[in-house]
Image (cartoon, rainbow, N blue to C red; front, side, top):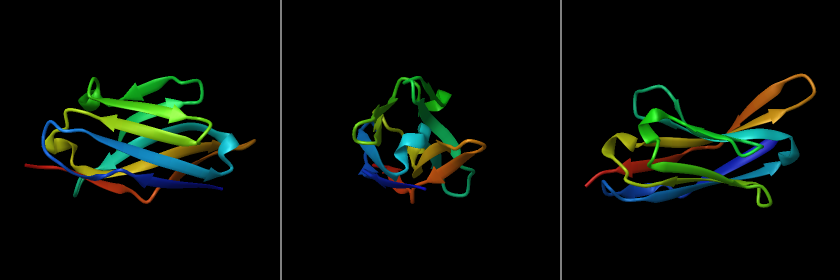
Length: 119
């Protein structure tokens, strides 16, 4: 079992920055990858950025060059640095973790944090 707690959301003006944090607890040694997803109002949840245990990352095209995902393995925390924010980045952002057992990979989710980009 893994628990994820996000923080750092809020209201920011276009062009501004925010940093999201996600702290993992529980069976963190079995986490193979962590990521951030977002869900704008009335739309489907989409991948924003993901980082695997060896440090490789991937990003949605819409955030490349603006967002950076990083991971502090000692603190079991993943971060999403968001720069040059746009109104279309407004969404609930969810932290995600893939936990590997001997036969299955299970996804865990945080409760979500609201990011609103507006003037």
